[in-house]
Amino acid sequence: MRERLLDRPGFGAGGLLDLSSSFRDLADLWLEDLEMRELSDGTKKNYRDDLRLRVRPQFEHFSLGELTTGRVEWFLRSERAVSFSRAHHSRTILNQLFGFALRHDAIPRNPVQGTSPLRRPKGERQALTVEQINAIRDAAGRWRTGPDVKGPKPDGQVRDIIEVLLGTALRIGECLALRVSDVEDGPSGMTISVTGTVVLRTGSGAVRQDHPKTEHSIRRIAVPDFAADVVRARLAGILTTDPGRTIFANRAGKPLSPFNVRRTFRAFLELADLAGEGITLRWYRRTGATVIARGASADAAATFLGHGSTAITEGHYIEPDRSVDRGPAGILERTLRRVNPDTSLLSTDDEAVDNPALDFLDEEDIEAA
Image (cartoon, rainbow, N blue to C red; front, side, top):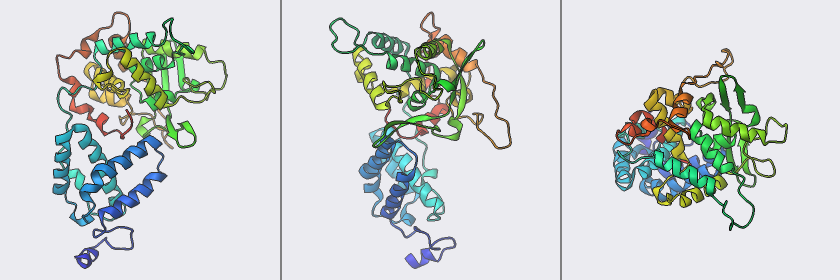
């Protein structure tokens, strides 16, 4: 068997892997490669855990040549019987592993590509309702402000962060990476440039990384007035003239930790009696996508969220387009502003929140939500 595989054209030509290699060998090499990638420590840990707990035990006794689409399909079906999230995470890991093998000429095709698509169950909302938005806003304003609260009063940063997330649908790391120099404010309104993200590094804590997740994530977007007002207030309170200072920062002037922001957000949920709803900061991203997709189109939502092909890139030969579509910001303003919002786009009477065109959100990297 081994000799027949090695005789096949394109295989066994001195590479680290071939069709006779074990899945264990592939997993070990992929883990080595993972450590060299520019991902947050939390993302790497999630990848390692998903591989160790679910994927590796299922396939470790097979060679790469034995890992067929059918074998992967049945595994993903068994994962899907447990939960959509579990199947999605396992599929993501397998895609990365087999993509790595494909790039090293170890396999002729990625067996994950032929498997059945995973669909989020209808009714499994991950967009906020109007009632949830208002309850969290109220809780964020009340948190630790009572007369009996001991210690320093909150500085309101997390309260303002969720307002910015609501108006921009940014990833939390992108929001925390916003700098003074990323904001342009003029007669037609505010725009922000998304040029980086905040990640957690072992030994360094929260660090601003000078590029976001993907090339398409680099973008300029218009900001609705309700979120722009929050940004303006934050900018007015920044004493330093350093344009590279992040808008949201700790006492030392360094970027806030996503971990600490999520911890405070969970306290908001408890105060709002929403702790058992499974809500995370990522729900703000899907809420923005849902509102824009319903009010404009799924393509407009994808572009606004940094998944569209028209996102700004710094090409070598083409002058980047500096124009900004203010349409999505207008839709978000009408729907999510505090005073007299038109909440029809967040109605639960239709199934637009389950729009398959927004499945790109499910393909984003596995992160702590």
